[in-house]
Image 1 (spheres, rainbow, N blue to C red):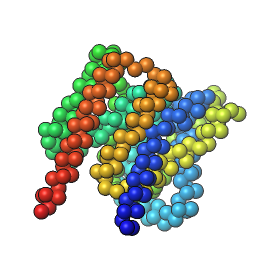
Image 2: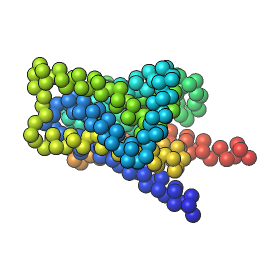
Image 3: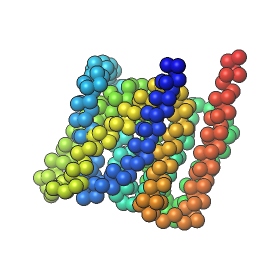
Image 4: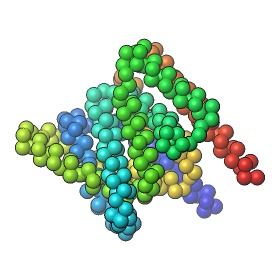
Length: 302
């Protein structure tokens, strides 16, 4: 009974995290009066402040202190985490820019193909082997990108930056496993000096776009908006299998896709439909391959 309750809680938290991530375009669209680069810098600083407040409240400060001590004792691991902080900052910045510039559909495309990019990175760096079905899934994604580039005439650079930056971020996190809350705090701590220096420089040389408006009000919540989905994700990940999390993750880009069409009213013609269809076909093939793998595992144990 307890296990069943824990599993249901895990499903709830996992869905909650991806629903929050999937509806983020609505939040960033509210901050239209602040330049995207400034929004990114405020997000870094406010994320750090939020985590420094939250960690003691949820009794994770001791764990955070231990994780920091481990990193200090292992400079190579510390460098990897700092590098991961700047990689995820690139991902955040690209996402914010994409929403501000009206590329919501490209954003959803990026997060659709991210799992398959992670497969390719695992093959390159961890020498993992993949079956023909997984290669077929990757082929469909490549065809979708090629079609969009040459037929639509729009190279999906935003999609690829989002997919590869998050894929590389995940790769780095595999090299240095660490609790998610400690990780985001340390990453924000490592990138905060850059954000502070940038904001001071802009305030001295020109003018910050922060002012007495609703965008300034909404930006104050950017720390919570960054951390809360991650907290929900962490709670879900410890209660349900990682394979199930892998399937639930498509809730995020699907919500972004629907927002792009029905809320942000981005054009969606036949060529774009073909592009997304190729991507969706690749994802379907990939999901089927994972289901087959999961079914084979119990048989292999027997």
